[in-house]
Length: 417
Ligand code: RNT
Ligand code: ZN
Image (cartoon, rainbow, N blue to C red; front, side, top):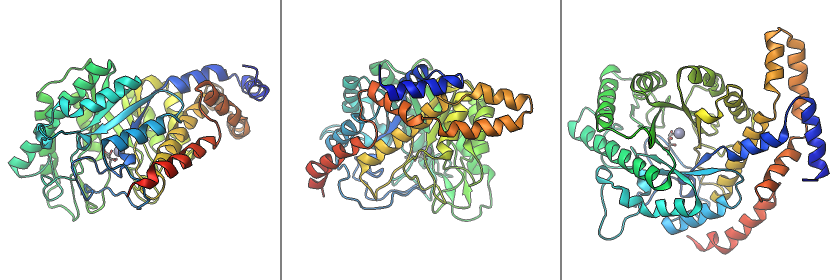
């Protein structure tokens, strides 16, 4: 470890009381869950043509994965250029059927994910799971678990229960706990006459799913709130208050997606309160441009602040960190890698920030020092530590990884249409 550039950076951070070696170690060992759905614009393998549920993937860049083999090959390519511990986040519509075992969402079984389980085990990865409450004919008038139609609700309750079993199976096979995240798009385009009943039905349906029981050693269940969706602008059943209150009362993990709040709300500011009152929290790290657009995560102020808050609250081991974005307008493998590396950089940056020193200034009301040091630390040689992290993970630093992806595009992706 005699890279003089790194040694110099190490000394600069040491002057702030920061140990770069342990920061690198923690940044590498903290798992980040990679969403399978960036690889094919959230289409899945059920033959769906349109994405609904108030979310949209825009763009038509060539080379999207068309089947499980292609998606797995693309994931492998992406994983080969992502430093640090990874998990794979699957959605129910990515079930892999053969000719004899096709099943609708309400009858999904662990066996429909066997190939994913093998994929994960071979690579030593954990798996997370998401029931898919969108892009399906049983979504009636934009509603699933909150529908007034008994049959619709019953169908989705069965889907929820099936998802618990799949998540438990993932954990048993991989030996790693699985996070099962529930996000229902349920909402209305127009101003509702009744905001109460859909929420009451949603709570009742979720209760029915949980009543089926699940092994808390194997899985955690999270609930993701949202503010609005495209075509569902006026009312969201699973609002922030609904999801927070429901999670708290039923022992679930609250999940915050930073695209799911009003534009001036900061998820970073919500994290301390959530960590104060929950053993665990979950995050969907995304980037919204003017709306919940799910742009590729960048190493920007918002991402940095979110990860800093997780770190300074001592929340790294209490927080499920997952990525959630889908950009169809650029090379999708590059999108995966860019977002993951940005999130990992933000985590490293947080671990390299002298939070205790800064908090001390705040507590002493020494706001001058707080401002000055906060600004000076910004130009500390972060890049040298990031390069060292990449070297320790045996991954290219800088943009060298992109050459590999361009080659992959020419040789593999461009042959798809
Ligand atoms: C949608 C939510 C949700 C989805 C995924 C595909 O607004 O963020 O997490 O992005 O389930
Ligand atoms: Zn999300």
